[in-house]
Amino acid sequence: MTREAVRAAVLAALGEIAPEADLARLAPEAELRDALDLDSMDFLGFVQRLAAATGVEAPEADYARLATLAGCVDYFAARAR
Image 1: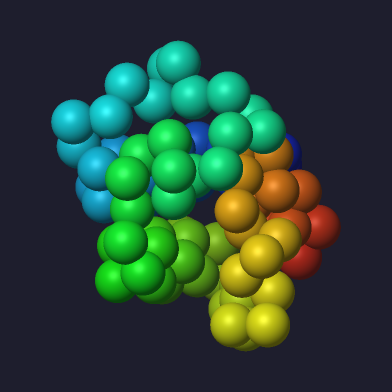
Image 2 (image 1 turned 180 degrees about the vertical axis):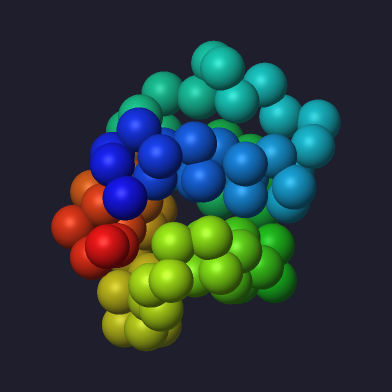
């Protein structure tokens, strides 16, 4: 997957979890949980949606690397085929 495709998948997953969020204004380095008011279940659902979209499973030990939009794109782009 290209970085652009991964970014689109991340934004689509976030849109499903937080449909009221203005994702166009989401800064790449903003903490997703704070910026979008995600609780732990929301975040888990987000990670599961990304796994389904990219074919990449992220272990819980790597969740800290998925804290921002930029981090998610970097993580999944490096692993998705």
